[in-house]
Image 1 (tube, rainbow, N blue to C red):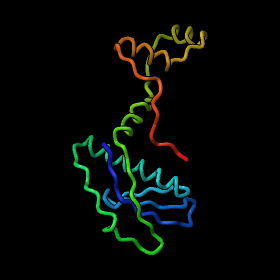
Image 2 (image 1 turned 180 degrees about the vertical axis):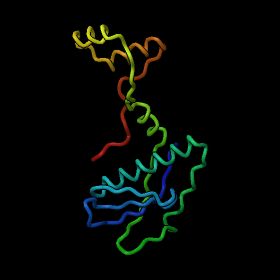
Image 3 (image 1 turned 45 degrees about the vertical axis):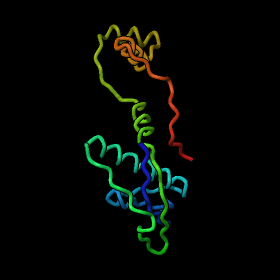
Image 4 (image 1 turned 135 degrees about the vertical axis):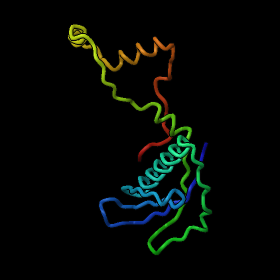
Length: 144
């Protein structure tokens, strides 16, 4: 699912060059160093909020027409699109830290053999569950 929401960009004199507001998402705020980064951060924020709303069973707000968004002097408005399905895929590929317990002798033997515990556990779980995922996905979100 793809969504597009209007955002308001405000140039600041702070460390971050732009403050970004998403009016339709409870005036959610983010900021970015430079215009490209500010737009990337807006896309990320829109994606995150919309995915959370979907997960909680909340409807996504309808976007306000860009012409209906008021701006103050020094502010600019534009539209930012987000691909929620691609964002979910990106989140699915994130590593999750797990704590586990193994016998001490097995730990020592694995360390002596320079075994990568995370990779070995992931391989064993895939085999045990009979699942396979592509090794690498291309993310639509790339920071410039």
